[in-house]
Length: 139
Image 1 (cartoon, one colour):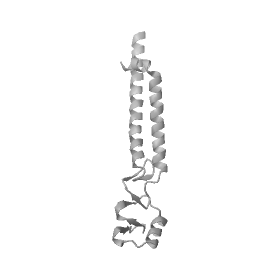
Image 2: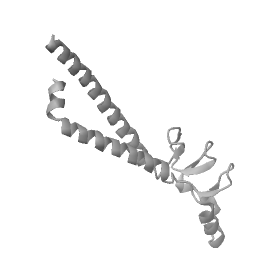
Image 3: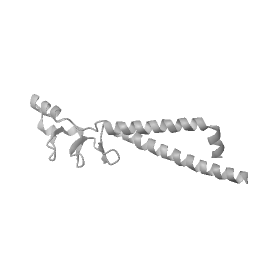
Image 4: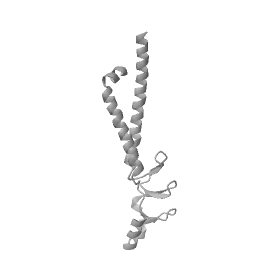
């Protein structure tokens, strides 16, 4: 059954492969290149020095000594040695933290990778089935 589907929709399958591959690569690059939410030291230093800010609304990280507002909910990443706003985890595939600003691209990356791999395995299975079908038909 899948043999005939592949034969009839060969161009559609190629287009789906290309689209899923482009989505996978683009989301991977966005995950790697977008700042995950590491705040710049200058920004917070300027805000604290120039304004009278209530110190109860700011937190100082004991590891990197950066001062961050409590409402940003940041955590310190041991691998990157930096505080990350909306810290989710440190991804070994990208070598980067996953935080507030690159989390959606990471989810797109993981899902498009799964879709791409499923398409590869289904196509591989169908091609093996098709070859065995042809060999039985010729005998």
